[in-house]
Image (cartoon, rainbow, N blue to C red; front, side, top):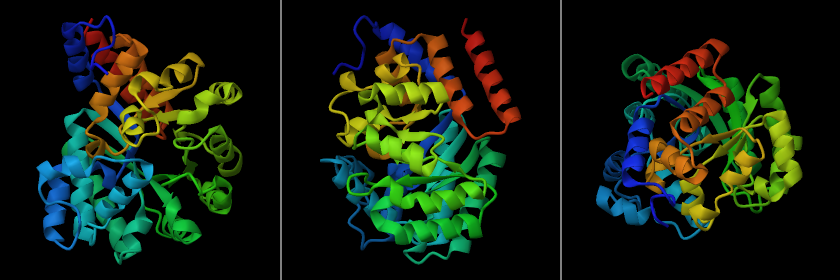
Length: 351
């Protein structure tokens, strides 16, 4: 596929790229370890030479080429295995925020999987201290506000759900706002996690499970009915069920859409076939996100440019997409109002 949508001139595309680069943004679906830049992954791999992960940034591009979703999970977990102590956690977290600041991301809800680290021997208290220290430094030094979504790695089963719930509720860090479920969907039914989501929701955390990325619409219905989902991670297959799209639109339940990720993991064959157009046409509140950006050779700016081409958006349309993320976020009302106003002021400056 060409980088340009039909009828788009290179000059217009360049203008849009410049607009997107400076646009103040929020991101709602981006993974902690999956956001490690090649430089940081290579540095961690060099520190842990027993890992299969290359310690050459140039070699990581080939390493991050995925045959299918199962292969992506295998590669992702090999990178997770590089995070072995609290210093690794703190370094990774702050560097992720630094990359966000370069893209004018003002606010991000970072999906963190504490079980993957505590299961490998990092004490829960040390893990929480590391991410919180990085969060406070990122806000003070970089102007990036981070919040946490603690997610259950579905492939690790109910043991991981139990531990994630214990860590979230027993050690609840100040930045924690939501509770999620990631990993493969095939063979990992959503309803089995209901008791853990019930506990998290009772403690005031928002429900944001992945659903319908590599499975059909019924997985999304399960996330809504059984897990009380307030947002859906990916939701790619929602476009296959007209009634589901109507439900999402009527209830204003956002979808966290990650176009390039869906191509990289083979959840969608090519960008021209991405269902984001059907989602938007149905009136669903769509947000655009990068998921695991360095692994997929993307970033949030690129995802906005991709969405603009797929949806035929002008600058005002892209700004409206950015405001969708603000509306769908778990920021306090004053924070949402501030960021929405900043987006409006920036857009007006381009008129």
